[in-house]
Length: 212
Image 1: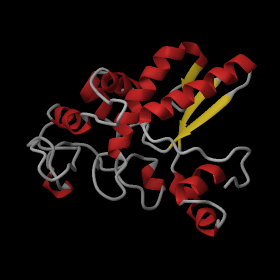
Image 2: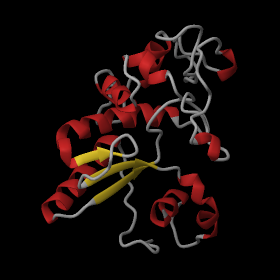
Image 3: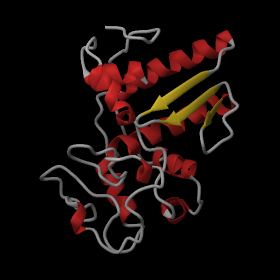
Image 4: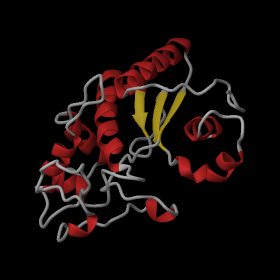
């Protein structure tokens, strides 16, 4: 059911379908001479020190490009995110920072539990997450509340989108955001109050997207 927004929320079954839908929206906006703001409920970056250690550049978008070159994600959502996370852990001392994986997935460099990590030298939360009560760390890849897996996969897809659209698309706050299309990070749980009060939606996700 459509709420106060101009369009009813659309439920897309795969990341490929979502990206195709997004490309159509971007193309329509560019053809119409309109500006488009696109918000994603994923992490756009990592705690200080991660990007430089992994890529040699202290830039979040360098991590996006690094992931785009390594993440495999097919039209049925099958992907190698846990293997890529294990490879990233090997770039750091100790064990970590990423953690969480399905039972039976044998990846010694990716601990199943967060408490098994040690000595990786990075903060648990980004500065922005310290301001948001209940935010989970981007290192957590599996089980309830995890945002790490969708962040890895999403950043890879968005890096490819940046390559496709060039100067017509920018990412805030990493770039000045004066392009026709601007990508931003959001945290949908920030509007939990209005979402809980909403009664005319089929599910929580629809309420979050529409009310945001």
